[in-house]
Length: 498
Image 1 (cartoon, helix red, strand yellow):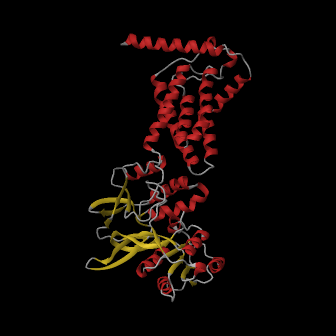
Image 2: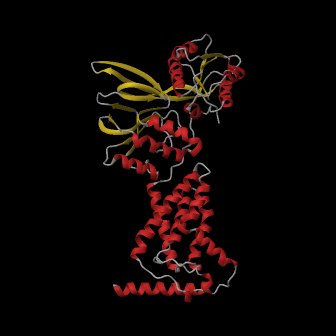
């Protein structure tokens, strides 16, 4: 066995010397300075950190590619320098193997096997390429150049570079295993239905919540301009919003109800529209308006077009039945849920993420927000469908949201008949450390602390303790238990045809 190992070592050594002789025969020139500088630029991963910093300026896949490249590089560097250089001591090439003027100065003193530069270069390029293939292809020549520069400058034998490159590729693939590629979002699908056309807003009654974060006098003027025949009710802060929504929906000649405001206002208007069996026109406005985005009326132009033509679709609505008060004398509240409901720390997380998102971009803002929220937060004891949990976040979405991780964003189908249930639990040992590590490494979606499923009915009980419940962004305090169900295709909403 030992003789076969010595034979393999001898064969590798012979191949290394053979290849190095061919490299040594290359004539000198400007390329020597180029490879020496390229090799120096990659010392301690500085080159790839600089590339990642530039990539991070571009949000979306490019920024995620930079992050994954850095994670893969860190793993490859740790494995190379912390394990293999200790286990595989090997002398560096000598001046007799290459022209002296090509040698890097000073010559590294650590083991030659494997090449840390090559491991980091390949790990970064492959890691970034797994997220965004075009970037991986663009980075490949630079990674190959760094790997070759280690042979050209006499820092490594060719086999060191091959082994280091294999470690780098392996690190990228392994980290991608616990940070999987997000599946593509499905195509938007609608169940179309008939609705009255509303040219110039004729037959349309609109309720406008002036407490919406982006409301200005120009907002009201714009609505009157595009809907000159509509009945527009501008609700002042001192007025009862629910009463004003009901009065607007009951205005004479109303064939459709329009709403301008945030998620809570839209949810209340949806409840009024469902009760009266009239279609809902959701206008883009308020601090948040997720339904308008999902409905395809994210701009006033799109909303006007759909209303004028009578283009509409059907959506399910969630029914939230909350029990409050004393156990012997409970108070039951039934709410319509258009978008999402949550228990625990999720509202704080979303608030922080959306505050940071303009400056940091969504992925990094989400990471920072998670750290800030959960570093000081405490889990809630919940029984979910009969199973006891300690829960950081209990999230229920009306419909299947994407991506399928801890930060749902889009809902391509509005009438799938499902509740999207997501829990981030503290049931495991070292729960806070597990959570913060998962946030740091971007593995929350695949972690054991995350539970994602779909259901038609869900019940959550706090065991007699009061809990804070949020439904479409509106808080309900003192809730003891809550049940969720789906009312299929209960709401007709205006949505422009593609």
